[in-house]
Length: 353
Image (cartoon, rainbow, N blue to C red; front, side, top):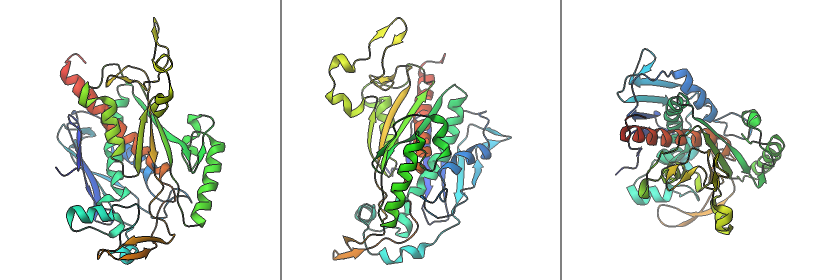
């Protein structure tokens, strides 16, 4: 088991490193005939790419997508769809000082222990750059789902200790934080800039809402829909927590408060977040992901080198002081991949769907 593939009926395998030649993805299980273009995938990649604002890494990557196979005359062929993005703005020398040091919060130490060898250039395979491949794959799944009436929307709900007080979908793509509240977004950005000045970083919470999912997707016991969503979202490197519906608040609620009662019109509430017993209810799916502060900070920290000696480290290079805004399209992409995978599984089980 290599851990580089995801899904059952719709599978993806990503490849590439942060400072290698390219990153990319191979999608297998796509139905033939889906109209999809490089331009449509590029729209989603442009939302994730670096250098979008003064609170993002200044690394400049065009992230230009290329279809390599599985696509002909504007449609998927049913064979594996391969997509690739070349790395163009690589400055591996920025990392030469930490070649033999383990950066706190990074996977340097664990990769060394697992493989006995690691690519120290910009975190290699553990870099957030790997998520570009997921966004590309997610864009394809998202197009397929949209053809079936599904709409996926993620946004920053809180960041740097500041919480959105209102929700306005129209402002999400109009502020650098991708927050659902413009006033809160301004406060978040100001706080992040202050942290940048001190060489520190921040984290936050991403909320995702999915509408248009029919009742019946998912499986009982081990392959619950929320379990696969949790796996997909938690597989994003910076994500450290996942909750759905009422989430952890459910632990403080009474059964009479948490239960989603029903009447002749359907459910009266949605504390379950659109999934009960591992199977979708037809309601809006709502979940949240906790994103940790960016590990790469310029403040001096204590660590260990490859000889086991205590040393100091100061991470140089180009890094996001907060990763939340760029994780939003990654969360949407992984959500699309999970939902399409379960939709295809349901279609295989019940031929009429």
